[in-house]
Image (cartoon, rainbow, N blue to C red; front, side):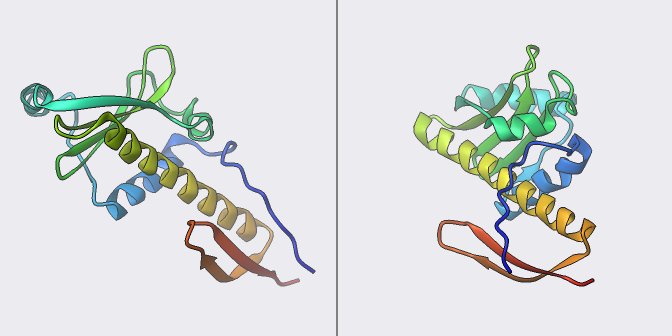
Length: 162
């Protein structure tokens, strides 16, 4: 007997629970969490670098925004850096979520948008994976096989022991 589970990443996770997933995706993609953005050293560095960068604002997918909408305060930020790219996850004063992608002026807006979108989609994918694994554990099921296809879709086979 088989079952197909369609999972949407929309309910039941808090920002503290999502933070390790965001950090893991960042590390896997080669990004580093920057120091406290309110520190004087960071502010000084940021002012110097902003003039040499192109910035593209990318709204987050509704799935990710719903996950963290109540858990992150307005004007809070998570800032990740890889090589010459900086991604800033933030919630503005109106409560809208964005990824601000910053890169060298020689990069196109499309390139920046693609980088930010790829990162955000990976977070949604990892969230869904962890959510499903948690649900399987709650019903005493064990993942016995896992396959990832070329499109990044994950197929899990689980077995539940009575």
